[in-house]
Image 1 (cartoon, rainbow, N blue to C red):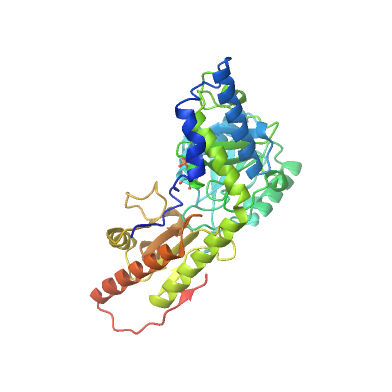
Image 2: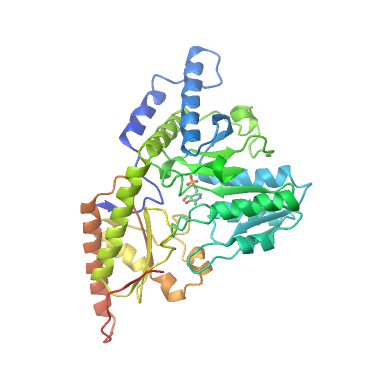
Length: 399
Ligand code: PLP
């Protein structure tokens, strides 16, 4: 049996998504900028997808800018605001647990004279509104705090962050913008950009059963943004380059399916994720959840196994056909310990012994049972090799 539990890295394309995309590789070959009917059909397919993506987050379609993925959306948000508003201030606030697409963009801006504050997180992986409030100054132009973390699934207090930004904007930082990276939360939990007062929000197609290489940035109407790419006037002059028509069509269909099936997908993933954690807790000793169990997306479980090495577990599981991760896909392959778990203040051992299991709407209970059996067998075998005479009770620490 092969079990894929690395859906935070990427998800399989849904059959409906593939069906919707296929004609745009063959019959519907138009460039959406062309005046003839081929071009017009491509354009209308893009606009339909734009409506579906907008609906997923309660935005207006004209506020959606299609990009090549979450990374480009993050770069466009951070650099776009920084360059367009540099005359008003050169201070940016983000968090220590952001995806590298945000962190590396901020670092590049620091080299260009911007000042960046990296907010700390609690042991549960959340920033606080108090820390944010204390960090905002008159020249702060951007707050970028992710919605859900890709390694732990922890959901940030977005309402409080948004309220803090609104209050600061009214009183002392008139040009302050709020961006959130929702690559791991869009399609997993309800998002209402209007209700939440978000100015910019990043999404990615391949995390919600859409294709790779397509994403979007929500840009609230009236937000001034510099561009990353120069060329044509595509995407209302926000993102130059011939549109990826099949990709955008696939992303639109994936967004539509995610919205329509949101609650049933949530329930199924949460039930299976909780089942996975309970079974692991019953079977192996000394395992802890690395997240805030009250504020977590339904599909991610980041666990630390005491005395274990996550990389060795990953390899042993892979040999049994089970795919998991030790952190974000971008960070794996390097031996750097997770910056997210480190920011949460976890001990080196606990960081080293961590594994991320991430489910999708298509994960089945048979797959979870197989993965648990494979993991249990591996841990028991590896622990037998470590001299240890202390009897330990099976316990899943709920922190
Ligand atoms: N932001 C977060 C939180 C992510 O998890 C990812 C992908 O892992 C990205 C951004 C980058 O998205 P993409 O792979 O579409 O470039």
